[in-house]
Amino acid sequence: MRYLTSILLCAFATVGCDVAAVDPNLVTRLAIAGVGLDDAAAPRYPAAGRSTDLFQNGSSAIDIYLPDTPELQRPIPAIILLQGARVHKSYYSRYCARIAAHGFVVLAANHDSAIGYFTSTSSVFDVLSYVTEALNDPTSRMFGIVDLDRIGVLGHSFGGATALTMVQGDCNFPFCSLAFERPSSIRAVSVYASHLADLSGDVISIDARGLPVQMMIGEFDAIASAGDIRRTYEALRNATKQLIELKGANHFAITDVNNPPGTITDTNDPQVDQDLSINLAADWVGVFMRAHVSNDNDALQYLQTCAAKENDLFGAVYEPFQLQPTLQATASDNNK
Image 1 (cartoon, rainbow, N blue to C red):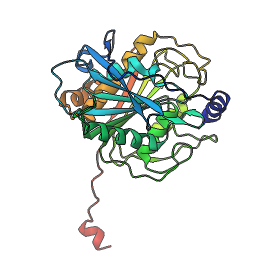
Image 2: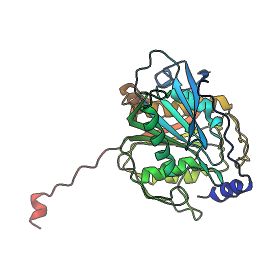
Image 3: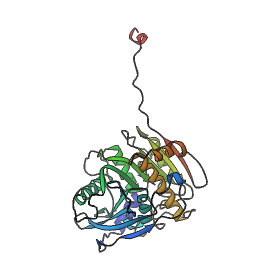
Image 4: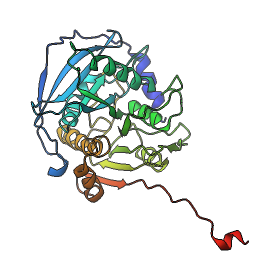
């Protein structure tokens, strides 16, 4: 990808994946506030709780976000976050909490590698393995929580390119090192500031095979080209798909702070409040995942009737996927 070389140079320049101490009894409550989308696409719960567990055999950590309500009906769908290159999972706390408040358990892990936090398609399987084990462990906070048949995947920047590689199903370096079969439990994918354009500008044609995909652009992103994102969107076939541009946003519109330390720097400052861009992006993800992962008819109706609009905060396009009818031979064709 066009920004891949810079990301890799940054990664090799600063290496370190220290794991903070994990207190399994600590739950942080995060209130959900601020302007987002319309009431019909707003979070369903007023707060989310965050706890942290060990991950990758104790060498790393994973944050678990859950709606903070006693009325939660379990099991619930899960959403896996694939972080941007060298962005620590903790910088997605407000984004993940607001998505969780739409009715999901959101799982944000530090996907460690020899050069820092870099995801691959194996990262998704690592989280699924963790969830499967914790789901059946009565001593785990995750016990009985997750519906393993309903999974969504999120990605930011490099992590989003990984998610798009998961959609395609082909193993392409550097987002994949081992051949894989896309799990049928993955029901939808959403990415921010991500594309599959190479250094020459060529874009991989993605056959989604019916998987819904949402893509988001930051208007002032100096790292991931809006043109490359749009061309990747156009190359996405056989999918219900949505393209959203956040006005005034840069590459790090979904992280708690602009330009998180340790990663590549976006030279363009955001022209919109960070809280607002986080809330807007999270609510778009929330309603998209509710429609396609949770089978929420109200969310689906919102996407079909309200999700193609333009205003001072965003522009959005939603394209439902329809199977093309099989051509039928006519009598005149047979007589030719």
